Length: 188
Length: 327
Image (cartoon, rainbow over all chains, first blue to last red; front, side, top):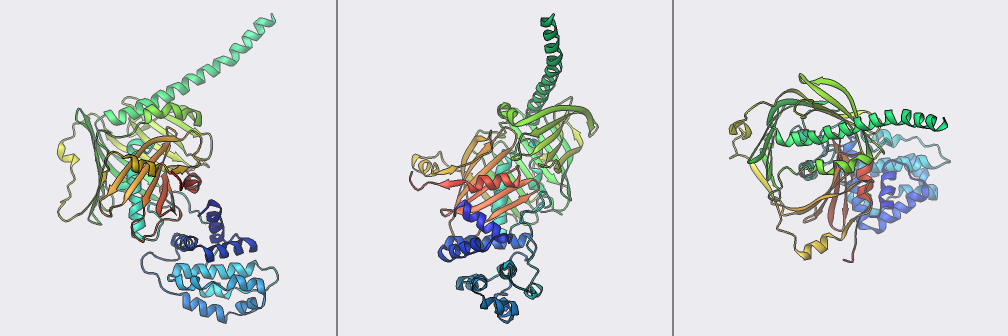
């Protein structure tokens, strides 16, 4: 995945894409298996980070969201307008792979962000109220606000911890204190 | 007359400059002696580690003698996590998860801080100033203010014991000057003998799960040509590679390559791990305290940048790592 594509994804997660970029991203995810996988993991980490979901056992909300979308007046009016429909008509793989609450919530975000983006409509984002609030917030957390890696899975966390230990060998000016980060890991 | 005037002006300008330069030189000397002291002194103490709203108290034992260095850190709050470092091994004990992680280093390295040798390379990228003297943990300390020249690295405030040159307190400063992390001794004893039992874990090892990672055999040419196909496209000015090693994680058989880049004060590691099964990985940024990480997947490898530098720095480095298909 190129840096440009990564940027596209990041901007998407932050709800900062314009129509053209959104189209570009959707066609990329349609055509590129890796980009798709990247997107889902990216979104999952981002949702964990924002506290939308806990780690291990995601709940499958995709059908519920799908149904909600179908019955949503905003969605129906969107269908009428070609451009909007492209945003809301999510590709099949999207639904197949949205096994988790995180991804589901992100689709809620996509739908709402996408519709609001349209200039001419009067959309009440009721969908947003039905779902965990998918607000478009900054991806960057406050630095130093956590002493735990903000990742969704134990395995990823363990891997990062191994890296943390290995990196600490070379940690610069904190010198003799640097392993404090390891011994106090995860303590509140 | 004009000549005298010029001479006077030149001297007037040069004198303060010379005294500043002398101060800075002294600051660099203190920094160098500080890194030596951390290696060569035997000490025992308790220090606080604060990051955001988290505050931890940690006991440290450090013994340096002819046999080398031995160090043990124990968390005094919550789970009594421990880290024991010897010349060739780092052991992390997590009593909560009943896990022990042992990471063996390539032999003969000792504690691999090569900071003193690299400090001179840091000077163009930081402004190092000697501040006032202060008092930390009952000891008189020099205060050093270290300001980076750009936003790709953090700044530091260090307090160094005027007697032993041991680092007594350290603050890591964000790009906006906020304190991201503080380490500070509350008590420290440098005139002490540390018996063996204080450097051993009190945890019973039988019921723990052990994970080991071993350094690999010296790299053969086949693998090294493979490894050289990874390129870092961008590093902040002044960063150069200071270490390279590969490890084999016994728990999952994964090969992990680590490259360390440093500007002499801050450092960044790039980890490249071949994916052996369908696993997930960090995508984008995450952090622990002031350590930032940026992860991505490339050519069936987990590529992760970890360092005590701002999030933008690990992201920019990570985004520009590339794999060349042709050797």
